[in-house]
Image 1 (tube, rainbow, N blue to C red):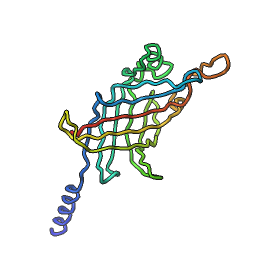
Image 2: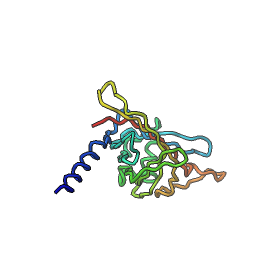
Image 3: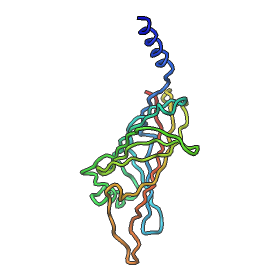
Image 4: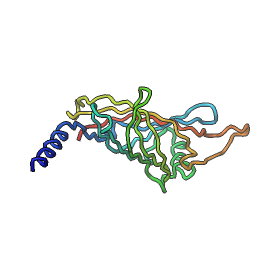
Amino acid sequence: MKLRNVLFLALAICALNTTAQTYNIDPGHSAVQIQVERFGVIDVSGRFKDVQGSITYDADDLSAMSAQAVIKVESYDANNPGGEEAVKSKAFLDQVSFPEIRFQSIGVNQREGKQYLIGNLTIKGVTKEIALPFTIKGPLPDLPTKKQSIAFEGGITINRLDYGIPFDRKLPNGTSLIGNDVKITLLILALAE
């Protein structure tokens, strides 16, 4: 009986010491941006405007962090209707068959002074594990909503071929129309539940 009370007290203390908070992504103030080389000359940029999900975060315990996100392919905007339709087409992201890009974290680690969110990224039905370097600011008060908020920023470069996007047209000189490397930048504002 006494041992049970001690275990209950220990669990209660652990629960009180857990300060992990769940923050919901604010789609109106968040974006996932991409850059890819076009015609071997310049990087073109676009962004997905519809990003939903959540981040659980404790500033004192990085191991308690987790995140999940869903990005709607339909929300891609590049200020170029032709380019937008190409990215959403079957040749690239195939919005009709694969309307969402998904990320689910599986852990966090630190190395060489950087923090990495480890997780599974699913694009066009292909899932690969990635290590996403990130920084977090906050929690700080969000004045309009009167809620606590965090800002999550991260960036990674992936190879589109790894995700089943094999588009391979070339210019007459042999230069690829579209580069294989896709730079992804996440600018996320998330608000406490």
